[in-house]
Image 1 (cartoon, rainbow, N blue to C red):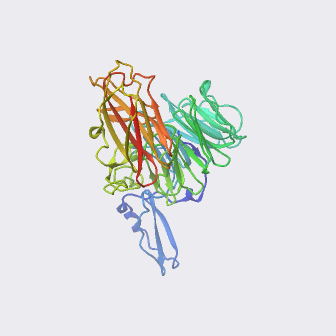
Image 2: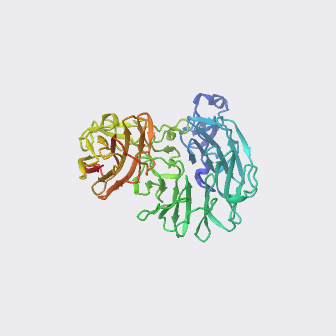
Image 3: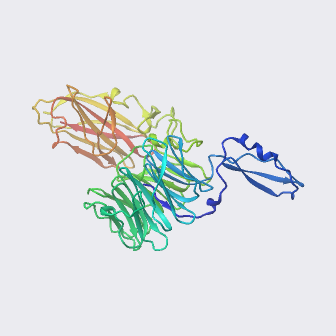
Length: 525
């Protein structure tokens, strides 16, 4: 659900996007070489771009090459598989898996894209909305309300495409279905005047003109934080709002126990849609842009570090527009490979964005960096997968004391351990685990069990990432240890590990300085 704002800037007047076939402009060379004034320049269209020539003396010189097809984007809107962008001439491009989709021929100043739905604000402020038939590249128009809009957000709701937007003249909200009719029921637009709106399938939030955040669509919604906001973004039942100082305040929309703020950085834009960072994809994660154009990503535990795409003029999800008009994306999610055709973005691990280290570089604690499908990078030291997990001394549920394991924590550490646990007391195991890391570091504690039959595989899944184990994706990450604090996971009230089993434990790096440090893992059953 990527929002679209009405903006005019000199970028909107950039020439057309560059053509791909430079030989396709031959017909222009046959134009008469008319007299001119020395130093005068002339520009003309070629294919999908433009080219220039300069007067030399009293005659025109040769035409230059078409402008680069990877430049002159002014807007990008990315959600999940589909992404859309605006070229410098205001024409929309949409694509999925680097395959271009057909788009309307209107000129837009901004657009919004959500799954298979898209809407653009035209130069007069009116809307053109369209959607793609599922699993095809064919598109059709869907309805839009009349009037001039300053900002919109669209999403696909079942088989319908829905949208919400702010009218330019009254700042009131309009929310519509794919016939262009006003929505009724829980998702009907509230009355009042508004500054910002964000939409997903069955939920919406908006910033009222007095700065209060209003959310609707479900009777069980958690009340937003009491902040004077300027912007809001929602995705997958999560929301973040920026207050008047640019501080991000985030909360779950439908369940409690999750609210945090980032008090030390002022942002001017925030977006939760389509988020993936090269370290981990996390619940409550998002990215925000500072006034200088830098991007900072975060989750409920704090900052995850910048994805380093360079200063951005505008961003959405995990893609943004650089100052030179190029699109750059970041993250370890396969969707981020869905860049516009012609944009080179894959790094040495086949993912988007810059890597802080290169494969084969030496890790601070020894070993070498290798590419990893989950994290982008892994510091390979011999036990980074469950198949190569370090074997620990067998134990049973009569042992009351903790067993302690100390190992080195390096950038992109992914250490695995396995221990044989005997059920000596017949089904009354009380497993407990602790992970401690030094100041400045954070790491996930992940645990799961396999009973002897191998028919029962269980893991704790308080955190959203899944781990590939025995050919299955298992939600196994339980807790996060950060900045000298211990993560403790007691599984007494669960059925995990109640019988004789193999217990697997994994310590997975989340963040910290590029130096070598020690972590401590303790466990008992």
